[in-house]
Length: 166
Image 1 (tube, rainbow, N blue to C red):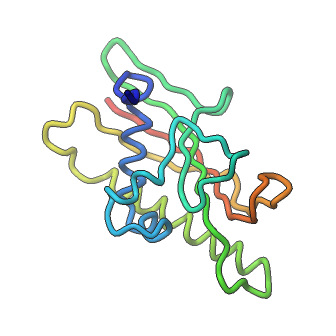
Image 2 (cartoon, rainbow, N blue to C red; image 1 turned 135 degrees about the horizontal axis):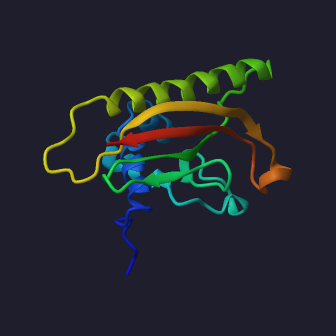
């Protein structure tokens, strides 16, 4: 029986995954026509990238020293999660690798704009936990080589997601 992300330190993964899957640009990245179709392409907490990155897709995870989660007695919460987006290389490839990187940076940026916009929407009725994304910080947008992952080249973008719920 699979474990459900329902505890106070794990529900943040499920809610962040729902927000990511609701992004129209993420749905386009993974070839999905709805959030429900895109959700299985969001992996959490973490993913064994050495077995092959989930390209296209996204991985949500915590990393010591980079991510936090704080809960108060007044039931307010805040924290950070890491999100790495994985995308396949364009076909056909660009002649200039800078063009490929720029295109990937645009795609990753549009996904974050979607997520921030969706996080501003009214809280759905009956939701006992709402994941309020308030900030996205880009760490790296690049591509992984086969010698780093044991798979063909893929594009990556690592982002720090900051959230708050009071």
